[in-house]
Length: 189
Image (cartoon, rainbow, N blue to C red; front, top):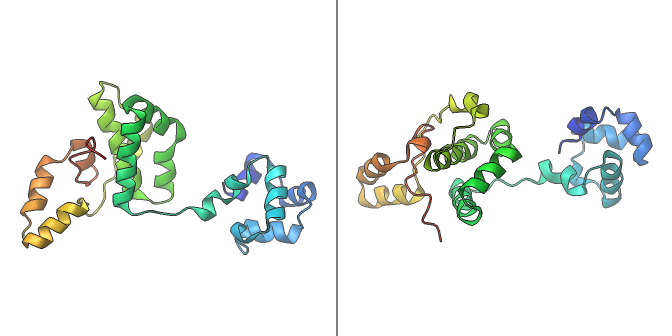
């Protein structure tokens, strides 16, 4: 969580946080302005700030420690989550967590749109209504078409666009809406 957002949410000033936590005002100010990255703070500083803000140390570090994996791994992880959780629980978890919007706000557009496409696809497959909360995001589309890496490799190996054309023709509509070519989300191992 961003420390500035926490201060606003809890209606705290930097001075009050400094006083409550015992962390110097200079340190609090440098963290909130970005001069000091919170991941470089000592454990004691993180502990004091998290205790005063009533969040975990992990919550404070989450934004600065986030790692963006390759899109292929991301897609695979999402498909495995669907398999492990089941369609309905996956939809509920995704919608309740706000993951789609969070990814979109971080400008992780392929991940956000893939997740939204998955929710829409699973909703259709299960006869559920589409969640209207993301209609603004549904109005967007990636500029370039994203193909699975296996399709790109087959096209390069064969020196032909035929594998791309075949994959495009078989793509699931909810994914194609966002310019993501995806034809298989169920058969994961």
